[in-house]
Image (cartoon, rainbow, N blue to C red; front, side, top):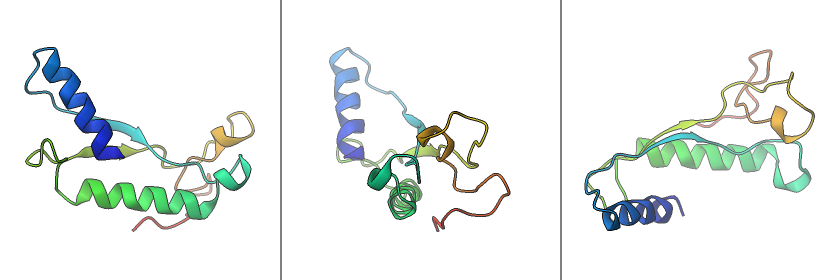
Length: 104
């Protein structure tokens, strides 16, 4: 799905006459708690591990196979001062710096 989203953006920009656009994914992640079965440690671990593998894999998308995908995970640390629910649970680490899960 990530490749399809990036390639659709590349195509949209080309339709507007922009041929060389660089994309950096500024924040991608999955919360590990706060919304029942949709936000579990296992889902967060799987999503973030696959995102890291995809970005570190060095390959591009089908449309731009020579352009590596760049991106960042949101967030490193859970934010326990945020509103209760999903918003507090995006971090790979809890506020005590203990890992919630392993992405490597």
